[in-house]
Image (tube, rainbow, N blue to C red):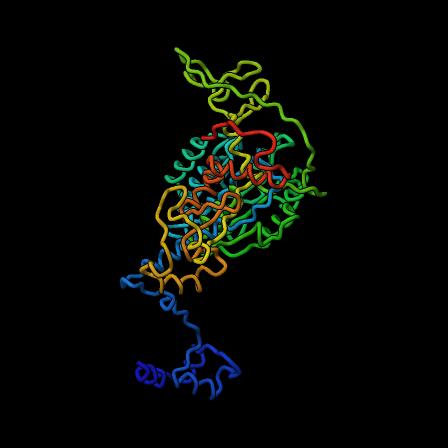
Amino acid sequence: MAESDDEYIQDISDDELDAHQVTRGAAAPGTKASRQGLRRGQQGWEVTRTWEHVVEGADGTINSTVEGLLQAGKRKRRLEDTTPIQRGIFRHLILLIDLSSAMTEKDYRPTRYLLTLRYAQEFVTEFFEQNPISQLGVIGMRDGLAVRVSDMSGNPSDHIGRLQALLKEEPKGHPSLQNGLEMARGALFDVPNHGTREVLILFGSLLTSDPGDIFTTITALCTSHITCTIIGLAAQVAICRTIVARTNPHLSPSESYTVPLSEPHYRDLLMRATTPPAMHNGPTSQPIKPTLIMMGFPSRILEPAPSLCACHRLPTRGGYLCTRCGTKVCDLGKDCPVCKLKLVSSTELARSYHHLFPLQNWTEVPWQRATAVDQKNCFACTTEFPLDKGTRRDSMAMSVRNVRVGAGNGVSESGRYECGNCGRHFCIDCDVFAHEVLHNCAGCLSSEGMLAAREAERGENGVEENGGYEEAMDLG
């Protein structure tokens, strides 16, 4: 192979060699030393041999390495800051999507347009799963205009249906950030002070066709306390960086303006916006004042005959009656159209509090700790753990994987993750499920975990075990 490369290089002329060579080191282009180096087969680029990181297990397969990469990806999403801070759980977000001709590029498969619409539908579902008492609206940008895709609503079915209808249309024209931001500012104008005002922009173009001065719009956004986050599908644009820097003074532009490197990275950046933003006090941010919010918790009714709802003016049999004025609405998570009372569900309100008090990250369990504890199965799903390092058929691949993949990613070499409160061990799937769905530890919620927590609390308060009273409550 080396001889064929030398013969090919010797056949070209010196001018062609100067035009195609890649310099590296002190040799200047066009010099005799650089040409001789290339004729000796010197490469002007670096090759990353990713196949060297793949290690076969004892059974001759690479299943253990693939499993390690998957675990590293799962744990990387979970290793987040769990410090309880004040966040806005009453979110009002506008999803501003670029529908211009730049979205027809195929650097994201199948195209930017189709991938963005698919991820937008997944984002809507996840947004209301994590923020059940919030509101969302969708706006598009094409032909230099802003197009209202769906109004501000708390029903994910409305937004998903409108996004699916966009699949039949073709992107065209140029986007207009100014028109899109002005329409978003108008949709967020009536948001109460206790709610957040956010705009998430999915921008795929390198230009914006605006009818006026966009800096006037940016100033109006700052005055209205609206924060903007941008995900750019192309290179970074200066005006986008200015928008996020002006509207997010407490964050660096690299945090609020990102460019995805691949399709999975694009999805991770989009799903990151499902977490409510932190509340800050500052000259450009909305002041934080403790206020009491009056809410109504209506129950669902089913009428024998259809009647008109006040929100859509459509005949329906089911719905909810406002606890103050008795007006019928289709779903909860919105204000009453008549008396403006906020109608929510008590279970959805309780689910929103996991952002304020997040579940702590579980720690990796080393082999020494795993063998010392008498727990052979996952406490949640009862999956059997490996007894020791020698019993794993892929122990060699596991050791290499932990050095190259697990370092800094929180991957446990024993496959166990321990809760710091109850001391129970869990597998990687239960770890992800507890932090992303349940937001509670199964071991802490069990009867044994609650008894252990009470015993620890008694010990901290100096209360003796049998000196005072006796517990007679059945926690099972």
